[in-house]
Amino acid sequence: MAKAPRSGPYICGIDAALDVVSGKWKGLVLWELHAHGVRRFAELRRALPGVSEKMLTQHLREMEADGLVHREVYAEVPPKVEYSLTDAGASLNEALRPLGDWGRERLQRQGLEVRPVAERP
Amino acid sequence: MAKAPRSGPYICGIDAALDVVSGKWKGLVLWELHAHGVRRFAELRRALPGVSEKMLTQHLREMEADGLVHREVYAEVPPKVEYSLTDAGASLNEALRPLGDWGRERLQRQGLEVRPVAERP
DNA sequence: CAGCATCCATTATGATACTG
DNA sequence: CAGTATCATAATGGATGCTG
Figure 1 (cartoon, rainbow over the protein chains, first blue to last red):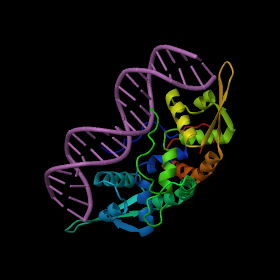
Figure 2: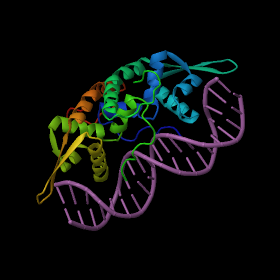
Figure 3: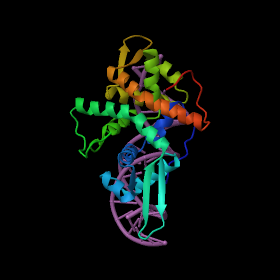
Figure 4: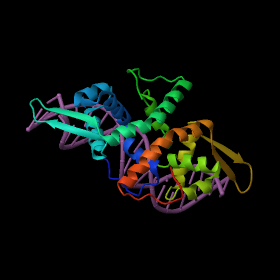
């Protein structure tokens, strides 16, 4: 099932922000859409090695409901759906940049591996 | 039980960063310790309305293991334990600031309530 | 192509009672 | 005071098969 609508009130801004980016692939989806502007379902799937169709669908639906992602459906055969960032999604991506920097630096310090797929947040 | 050590490799910096802040109260713990420098267990508990002792303990232990928080135990009766941020914790808190701004702005736009407990991230 | 439906495993979070 | 232990539930993630 999809994400529950959230029980109590938000405690602070970080609380509210984490609520919409928490999800194994959401940061990466934001990054992909930011980097490419528009992506189709299968393109996103290929860009996120290891994601299942179910999770990708679910995350995209949640991000759409949260107003981060725009979903454009074309009435064609075969089907075609394009995803892109809304203004809110783009600004969230900006707000995440320092966090990405922090994380990358941390990974380096610890000598941990990062899956090498071009440049990543 | 505590947090699992994480299965696969990290995908990007945001992935790594979210791994250490994901937890219902971790952002707030960072903020409290940043604001006050040093806090005791019961002080943190009071600062986080609704947190259970179990969750607070668990989060503090995880943040300690992740090198974000320092735990100082005093051999006294009654017991006394003080928590504070490490350098890594302080820098993470900085990196979270834009995200907190984004979240707060979002809450305002939506006219959502934020639990009014002084200034919050 | 872009998904939805199901079943199942693992994690995360909570409430409550008890202890050094 | 600062936790542990135990018992539950909710949320998240994954595998597989099917469809317009």
